[in-house]
Length: 613
Image 1 (cartoon, rainbow, N blue to C red):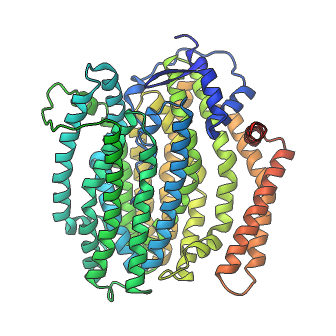
Image 2 (cartoon, helix red, strand yellow):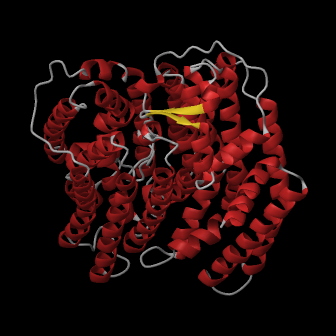
Image 3 (cartoon, rainbow, N blue to C red):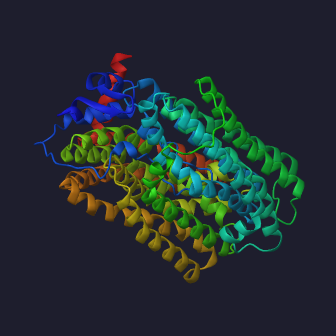
């Protein structure tokens, strides 16, 4: 289809005409802004000849794969399967993602208030992390990266619409999940030795108890993942994005109930097994409810399951073989989670362990999850279409455009995170069992995380270029030295810095994985795409940071001024409100005076929507 990449976008359901996409783009923020930027940046001379490694339709999107705990990525699989020309689906996905992330943040605040950041909080975070990492390692990555595109193709090609294949997959996965869950529950003590080997005495007993209760989730996490996969191939995207909200709300309720019954300041020595069971079962029930919502939605979409365990002729072997390199990437990322958890738990500094690290990680992920995920969801099908047409110039342009537009919002956010990390943490976390000092420790970790926002985002976008090329081998190979650098840095921190500072330095190790991976990926793609539009990207990043300097100065002045007032929470809240609103307005004004085009695309889109409303 010559020139097809300019006229439309490939989706599993076919080709969406450009005119339809432009009409939809006026109603969806990120696709609309991308269209605005595309019109303002006409392409140069065509550069054909780009050859994909394999059909991009065979490669799904596994998400970031490296998040410990239940902060899972919402776009795994969906970004590849979603037809980007359907405005309603994209809007539901975007809003659902925002609500899932915000309620996930509130859940973190409630758990922090209930358990704090001392040994009891560390125990809960270790216990919560294990079922998700075990599931992601053994099954979750396969579902997102392999079986979404596999089922999409079988649904289009098989005479029965892929029904037999879906029933076989569900039957095999259910059996595997049941066995995995039973084995994991029985091996809870060994898993704690693997992920939190530094725990001893009562802290280990508490962690093992919570882990056994939460490991039951593996079965329901897996069913939720499979149900989301089957909904994605049916173009039903709302429930997978909104169901985590139910989980978050129930877990928040369990945390508040625990706080009401047990009171503030519980420790591993004073908390009873009965109260821990209440918290653990309440958290697990949130996952059960999420699974129920997705299963009910799948049934309402017309899916009816009749057990089948015969695999001959199903094609699963061929699908699994395409995942070899993707699984290497996932294994390396999960190995990084394992090393990080062990370093955090072995540091042995109460209040500066795994809980404080994970709370800061949740906040760090918010800008990416809300902004960059929207960019990736819009870009991946576009880039796959350009690859199908052999147009490396258009793939390069889309990557550059997406990165610059994401950074237009992420640059002020990472700088703001740097300035507001401590007052923001005090404002949101210093309640119940989590003291002001504990909140400040979270803020100190978050300040280091803030520096990693742009390298993390760059890495994620570069990985999506590889997926659009159908190349999973290169990301897997790049992940190995990047993972070694992360692990070596984390272990060096454990041996070379004071115990209370180990967790503050862990974001550096975390960021090295993505900085190293992004550098290597950019060098490889530069050769394949004939460049990466580096000059325009560097110029845009420089102008965006310059435009943010007045806002940064204003925000820092607000934090300094309100910091002299008596008290903790109220001055922190005032600094956050005044500095954030004033700094945001200054950033937009300065960017407009400097004629920064990336900001102009957003303001032009907003003006158009206001005129039409």
